[in-house]
Image (cartoon, rainbow over all chains, first blue to last red):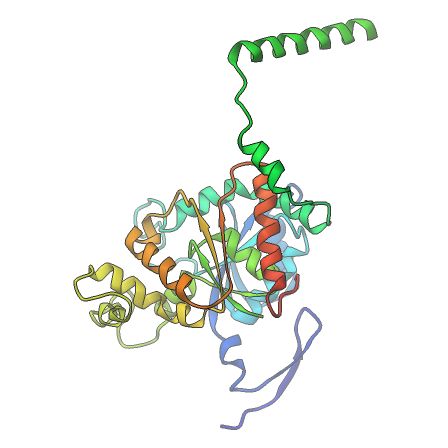
Length: 183
Length: 150
C-alpha cells in the first residue's frame, strides 16, 4: 500500500518523514502518568508548559502530577518537554486508561482506590531517594561498594540501648559546652 | 533500543528508568491499554472472553486456575517480545492488580528460562541500597545494545 509522505519536525528537532504505514504506531492513542517528586516544579507548571507548547494532548491534573492522553508521538514529546523542567524529579509511565474512562474513573465507581494505586503510592514514597540516587549516579560520583564493605555493613552490630543513651548525653553536653564557649 | 520486560509489571520506577536509559519498557499497561482501546464489537470488559484462558494453555496446564491462564495470555505478547528482563524482588505490594502470586512465580520462571539478559535486584530500603539499585540498573541498561541516556 503506497503512503503519502508528510515531512515534519518533532520536539527533538529530528526530521520525521511519515507515511500512512509508518504512522500506525505513532498514531496509537496512549495515556501517560507524569509523577512529580520535585522541589522546584508543581503540577500547575507542567500543565502550563504543555498548554503553551500547543502539543495536541489532553492533560488532567492529579494529586501526584498529571495524566496526559493523546497520540503516542505527541505524548512522548510532551513527556520529554516536561522532563526538561526537572530531569531527576519527574517520572513517567504508561497507563492503560485515558482520564475519565468509565470502568476506572473513581467518580463513576463511587470512590475507592484505582487498581494499581497501592504500588504507585509506595513507589512515590521512594521517589525522593531515587532522585537523589540518580543525581549521584549520573554525575559519576558513585563508587560501588566492595564485597568486603557490604559484608561489614550487613554484619554491623545494633547499638545497645544504654550505650545509645550515653552517646546522646555526651553529644548534648558537647553541644551545650560549644554554645557556652561561643556565647 | 531493546524491549525490556519489567517485574513488577506496572512499576513506575522501573518503567521510567528503562525509558530514561533509551529502551522500551514492556508493561501490563501496554497489554491492558490495547484491550481497552479495542474497537471491536464488544467493549471492555466484555472483550475478555473464555478464549483467553485457552490461550494461556501455552504456559500452564488445564487444571491450573483460569485466572492464572488468563493473565498469562494477557502477558504472552510481552513475553514473546522481551529482549531483556529486570526483576525486582521483595515487592511489598505484589497483590491487587499484580494478580495472584502463582502467576508471578510462573512468569519469573518463564523469563529466567528464556536465554536473554536478565538482572535481579531487590527493592532498596536505605539510601546506599537505592544508589546501588539505580547504578546496577543503569549499568545493565546502558550495556545492552542501543542503550543511551535520554
